[in-house]
Image (cartoon, rainbow over all chains, first blue to last red; front, side, top):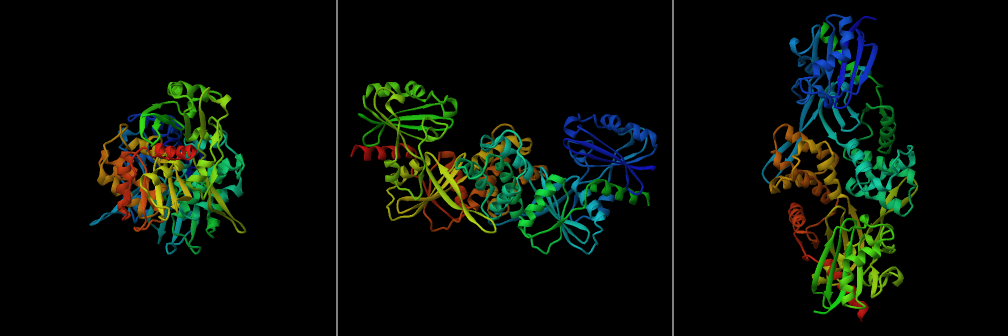
Length: 315
Length: 315
């Protein structure tokens, strides 16, 4: 297959790249522990050439599209956020092109813009203001997933992208109308590793125990706050009500359940889950506690999204 | 004044002691960075003698009452939890006496029991179970505060004890009927120091900015979850909507506001706040956003509580 696109996902801790054919088929993939935090401010072109120079030399003029934190203020070049509501055409038309001198000898390199949105937020006695939210990379996953699932422009959906900073994305008529970030994965890791609960939990990772996870989800869905429910990891262990190896799955359920409690979900909603296998299992279980079945577009939605943008440029 | 009691508050990170007269007046106070985490399992008697041996030698037979984590499994001697509802007489009658050989040559030494309670908790398809909660030390502060405020046995009150692990205590007819722990102070410190927000916040502590704190409280009270609202510290900074020095106070408001949102508070409730000066200021501000004014019994409620227990032993 002839390479038509170098697709790159350059995040905080990882740099991934794929060589794609014109129809989006993956020819070859690579991953490096060269997230933007490891790259000096003037070192992005060099790292890029080290990792993908051979691919680019083999296909002169190869288009390269990048997503993720590479487009942030700490990245290669800041790509301004696109304001919501935003559709596929908006991000495809607002690519941030790297000036040739800054990049490399051959080919065109662009960064896909992230999205920003405003949600109703600050209220005091006299003013109603809004809270901003941002994403970089997830927008491309969402549009890739819409393509993979062949979701019609008339259908609404909630897209869930769990992780260190989970995103809940509202899609209406093929456009992202708003989204919300939850620090779920990060707060889980802090509680698991840095809080008093770390003394109760075993230092090694425990096997996943579904029943304990579901208990955690149910506790979280009943209300209150993670500030309160998290302490039950300690007290349930103190009174031998949960086995030591079940505590980790229980805590995971508490944190993911808290994320779900903050949503206004109805069983009639179309919920699309974009996650790796381990998180897909947990979120499917958790969403089932809310009476919701979700669909998954499978892996590589980032490559699908970047391939779709490339096709608009080739037209 | 003649010493009648050696009152000791031996917590996780600090050891405090006071020499009290028969009427509860403080004759002298001491504090040491000798929390139970610094003491080997068989070293409690030695540390105790090092810190307070001279006071005990000067008053042979001096009664000593201790509260806090010194009565936990990791402390000097485990003092069983008293089950709620529990009144002052319950904890005064269930002291855990240190056997003379384990203590020191002169005097009587006892540990005040902590409290445990059960709250409605685990639900699955077929069972309704409860979640346990525990406290050690706060029970003595609560009974000390009830004395200081001369709250009648017929009056109900909510006692709030903010801190690393905040306690909300329901008092009915002079007895503690139930309570709830919130990991508020600990989660604030984790977000402040160990999360991605630490990169946005300045490394040094900022001055307290009341307006930013109140904004945080208001955002938190509107709903959702700290998992979501915490991310706004980052986005408000990203779009220059809050000054760098206001972010810390704003985050503090978000976390304390989350604790308040989880309560069912009404403006008619009697709320008693037991905290140091800095936390008293913040919780008074936050409670005012819920339309609640609270009263404070002042400092040294632990000494007042221990003095009251000592008086029952002298009768």
